[in-house]
Length: 555
Image (tube, rainbow, N blue to C red; front, side, top):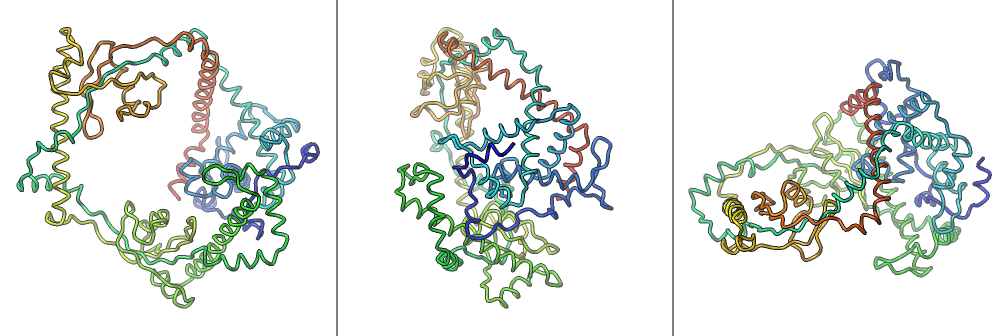
């Protein structure tokens, strides 16, 4: 079936640049900590729908989870960014296992033609419309030690998941045109409002600051001035730049590299390469950029290899103690640096670009005194715990200046909010008796501002409008009737009072133009909600959710 795909090979779907110079170092290992976290005592791996989970099952779906991460995030599959975006290897593994079981339960399969169609649709060059499947196999699958069979299994499961979603979420399609029209009109109604804003900066001059008040404020706010527990570590830094000369020398020994750079430039197309202003680069400039990327990537890779070699030797030293880092570094002629005391929320000098290392360092213990090698954009780090400094409260005299600032701000906020509450009550009475909101504001010597119209689907106000969160305004307006003054609402350090002048009906031309797409989107959302609810319930019932929670705790 893949012969048809291989006939038109003009586009490289993914290029792993570091692989141009050196063969890809195995990223995945059968001894992943994630798999060990799923294991219980005695080599047991838990159960799924009342049946035991085997190592073979976990390994198989672990490979599929790794492939999913590689296809979605490329080289960043194991990065903090990928984890922040919700990718978790354990969870992906168990969800794929669950999906596979459900596809078999529902008798859903994907044909070879469907797989070929999926590949053509998803690996297609959007500019030329062609697919270079063999390049994808070589540069992505083979380079990362995945087989075509594993990729095809992954595709079949993706297709099957789409069909399963359609089967489960049929009820979600039941949204009538009238129901959608009512909701569309409601969401596009325009709220016309005026606001009176109360900022602490307008009341700061009224705050009197006395020594007794400051000390009492400090005593009441001790938790805010407490210095958190701090950490001191020693660390090594392998800069990628140190390895650049040898990378350059290796490239110089490879005359074919220039042709590879040129081939990549032609595959991507001239329009792909632009400067920071969006201007298309010349061919020479673009090839120079490709070359720089290759050098930087490979230099960082070699820095990582050097750090890993050092770490392996460090971890093997007995007994395990933090001083081993300095001792081993001295033998290898490496310079050890020591940080000033720091906390997780305050990066120390020298580690401003190594937030992940800092987060790992504050979790070190005497039993586990070393971090793993941590990679940043330009360097690789490894740290050892030196000491902990207990949390403490500084004397008042040491923080008096900051206490004064905080006291003045707190009291100004109290004055602003009291003024806002008084105005809200007066304005509600005034408007109820027939006065305008503007007149009530003028009488109270408060400035009333007219905001641009907004609706339930508005995300932000135009430039130049008062800096008020639209979601906040939407929540306030949702409880008001036209012509009503709302209560004082705390907002940031101050607050505001909202007057809803009018709720303007949605323009019928807008309703006519957007209703069909809105109806389709509503049905899609209902389907997705129905499927997610079913998936969560069935996943929980299967026992895999409990297993995932247990593995998270183990890790």
